[in-house]
Image (cartoon, rainbow, N blue to C red; front, side):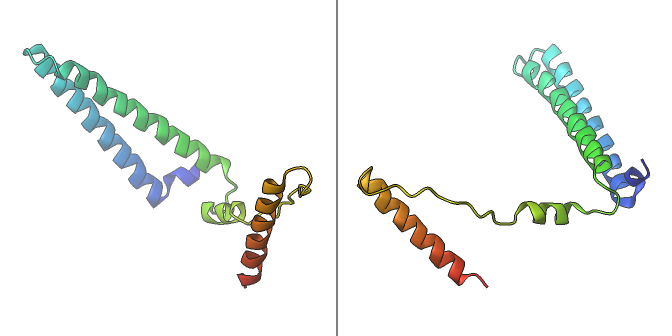
Length: 120
């Protein structure tokens, strides 16, 4: 829980509270305009509170994600590990089965070989 009280998270909490208050205020303003006879404002009166609900959902999701990560790890290093290239094998099709597909597979294999040779 303490991780949610850092400078970054305190700023995020303040921003979220401000945005929610602004969205609800805009929704109230549109509801008043709708009551004054502007029919288009009925949609906006529902739209702004919906945005506020989305912000709350994303805020809770971000906090839960922060609490689930190990304390010493950073998100950037976890993402870097996820972006490592994966070596895959391809089943080569015989020319007898499908000559066009076999030619295409050879072309892809050559491209892959060139790409691996050009990497440091």
